[in-house]
Structure formats: structure tokens, C-alpha cells
Amino acid sequence: MDSLRGQLLVASPALIDPNFRRAVILIGEHNEEGAMGLVLNRPSAASVGEAVPDLEQLVDPLARVFVGGPVRPSAVLVLAEWEEPEKAGMLVGERIGFLPAEAEFDALEQATSRARVFAGYAGWGPGQLEGEVERSDWVVAPADEEDVFGEDPEELWPAVLERLGGRFALLARMPVDPSLN
Image (cartoon, rainbow, N blue to C red; front, side, top):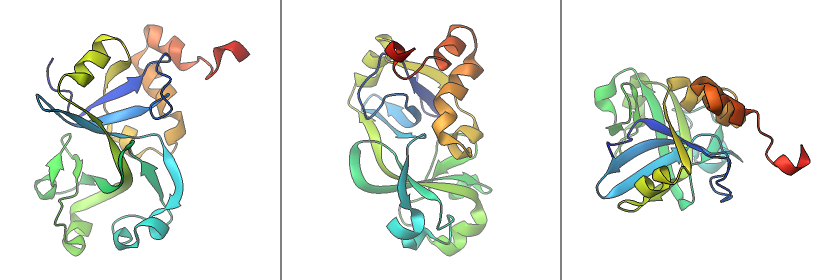
């Protein structure tokens, strides 16, 4: 399987793990050693100002911290849209990438146009993600910058499926619990 870096994983309706039910994950890294990504549609109740006040100059202090995944929930990752992509720690797409570990926020404030803060991440060991994709646990979809920074993250799962069209558009309209239909 080719690297899925920069692609979205959209949870299939059959994936019932509470960490990933109706999740949309941006893959940040994928190679023979495994994969890591960030859940884009799980805002937490905590604001950036409450949880990570050091990041207030890069991100609106009232913006929500997102639950990036179940791995290392105390880890803080910042995904940004870069005006100067060469300053990113690691790019996921053309202009979307992670803050470098040794970031100087004053310099980065001008280098980024918007950013989102995540607590934790999703991770897979060697071959694990490939197996899950082959089992159809995930639908692979192209990522769009607005998927990362959109105003309504709770609606991202159906929006991406609608964008894919066909049978995926039908899945987008499926209720969370089909037995209540």
C-alpha cells in the first residue's frame, strides 16, 4: 500500500470502537514502521486558554482543544496552515503541517495563518492500518484544508462521505443507531 500521509480515514459505520466511531482522521505519517494521525472531528470541552495557555498567541484562546486520538492523551500537537511551509516541523500536505518541537511562537505567528490544537493522537503499528483498510474499517478519502479547520467539525464525517458521492453519500445519511430509524 502506498503511503496514506495527507489522506483522510473516514470510519465505516461498522467501526464501533468509541474512540473511532464516525471519526475522520488526517494521516500525518505512514510508512513501514506504522502510522499516526489526528482525529479531526472530536472537539473537547477544554479551551486552548484553559488547557495550553502557552499557545494563546498562535491559536484563539477560546478555541477548543481537539481529542486527536487515544494514544498519549497528554501529548499536545498543533496542526497549522503555513504561509511559510518551510518553517513547519513536518508537512502533511502542501501547506498543512505540524509545529516544530522547538517552536519559537513569535516567529511562527507570522508563518501560519490558522492552527488547531490536539491532545493525543491515533497510532498504528507496522501493517496494522493496512489490515484495517483491507477489512473496510476505513474509507480513504482525499483531504481538503477545510477538513482540518472547518467551522463545524461534528458534521465532518457526513460531509466527507457526501463529497465522495455514490454509495458513500448514502452512508452519510445513515443514523448513528440504525435500529432507531
